Image (cartoon, rainbow, N blue to C red; front, side, top):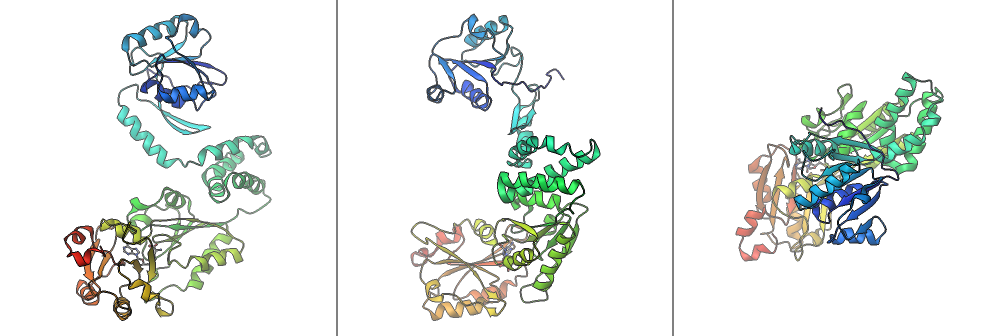
Length: 464
Ligand code: SAH
């Protein structure tokens, strides 16, 4: 370790930056996040630098720095694009005993600026001593994805609570308290109610750790997306990491279930369109039962939990049992399916609205505004539409839809076994029967795959 990592306090510290081009700008963007008193020396500053000076964020001197300019400074950046000028600045800084960084010149620098993941007051600094900047960037990207943006405020709120937490005995008890706050209670409360929620969570958690209350259970309604684990949100991944119990649907893929915490209890409540399923009442009861025992329950639903997911019934059950809950959205099947055929759900001049329909509901085939759907240019994503294909076709034709209206069925969208069936309203039921699709499938009314759309005769183009 040639370079020793430290965190330097820049509270009221003077930092000198010389240069007015891109390298200076890059450093200044970072330095402006600190309370440092900044002086920039630049004869020809970039407009942003001039604007910052105007706004009083830094002092701008339209000249090269002199020896006296470095007296009392904590750090200096020689960020001139001209090498000789930068070397001159660096020499002046060194002579004044100030640590200096010469931009893009590791050997001439007394310190280097690491790649930074900023969740202040939590900051992660990554350095490779110049060996592999690409690696530093990759590590940074990885950590950026892993550390939620809420970590900063959560840590700030936690810091303000440190005195109160001292009512807990030093050591294990206090450590467990902070671990609960930072890994589960804090992020969850912040997601639900922002800063006020995180502050309240600290009070509840302290009461619990002092032995006054039982740990409260909680239900997260999490969207698992269309099947590809890479289409999970970061929040969904985190919820799976923290779950005590995962209650999941049939359409959630094994690769996603793999991501749940190893110790989590996994409960399959697989629901099949018309087939056997765990009754909704039973699912509600199951969720409530586990949360009541203090479990962190993840109710994992395919796609987005707010789309044809019977979410409200489960929320009502939680409310009735006074159990806290929140929703983590997911990528709905229509989004994944439309991506796979290279189309947009809406398109200027074609359709300014799109409908999400279900082919059937608890009462059987679902009724819709067929007259509106039969108009040219309409786009609808039909969920659970395979068995209803003939019904939908009949209704639409009855209301005057063009038999040539393109219809595309996407099976297993986003999964390795994805299939696209390009059809028309006239031939949909026969084409579907011939394709013998067994996986979940989404039917687009009024959309053809982009490549096919381009080859269509002019008459049909208006639909595509
Ligand atoms: N909440 C889910 C929808 C649940 S209803 C969502 O937002 O996607 C179940 C229906 O969704 C299936 O019958 C099928 O029409 C559709 N579906 C779910 N996953 C799919 C996938 N990977 N490919 C195509 N359709 C899918």
